Image (tube, one colour):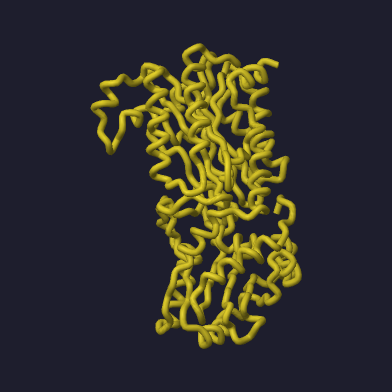
Length: 430
């Protein structure tokens, strides 16, 4: 791994919190992700399943975590099953985790090789009544591929059909949404790397550069600072491309007078950051561009203040909609009649700001969190309003990552990343 070792106390604490929510005489199983094939002998770069990483810190394929807090054998209350490392694997792929290294990473003392899994699981299943399976219940999930977790769940339910089945997802949704201080530090690291990348491109952008060249500059800076790269598919959208919300081609030339909307950020140790900025190709905003830019910035600043403990996500978006409506009226993009005659299910402001303002962030860019439950301290949210005006040839989105505090305004993890229009102009022209 490129990232520095993480204190195992994070994973020990996460397991303690999870097992405290389990039913009596129950066992929970978590699998690593597959390495996904492309064609021939090519594969996608490995990405660990976030749940097994959250609970163990193991960042390796073909790994299984078993938690059984009521097990009669104390040594079987936490178990890792790992792919056995050997000299051949060490030569061709690099050494996999040894049992000693797995303990150092996770704090789990009992480590078996995968070849012993079925035998050990038989013993464990005779001692428990309920099995927690791990299903993807994220509100944005749309998965067609059968995962390693899915295959393991089928095997387990076929082999042990008399056991009760429970779901890990509701527990993890609540636990993962509230961040440990170590996690906040890791997200801050990702944000700091993102800052380095953004400052680099401020000195690089000029009329005539291509969007993919900017992408390359960002990737260079991210990799040299221990990141695997982008936390999500980067959006580098110049001119009218900014009005395509998920524009990812990044293949157009940046023209004088246009704006570039960036939605690009680094990961660090599997933790995401999520940044949006909008900068002028020529180094100066026009008066109209700056007026819209500052309107978006005011919405972001006001929306941030509403992220407090007890706030409901849906109510928050209603409030942000009111703030955005006021700004759109001031810009002449809406008039009073538009607001008076609006459809309550699709308010007038949605013509120019059609996406949500905030989402949970952490191990996943759109992280776990139950949106119908009140916000809590130490949840990390994005704040990302935008105004998109195809008829004027530009769109603007500004986004920071913030941590909800017990009292007062959220902590902005991106406070050092330039956002004021004048500062961006100064940096681009220095």
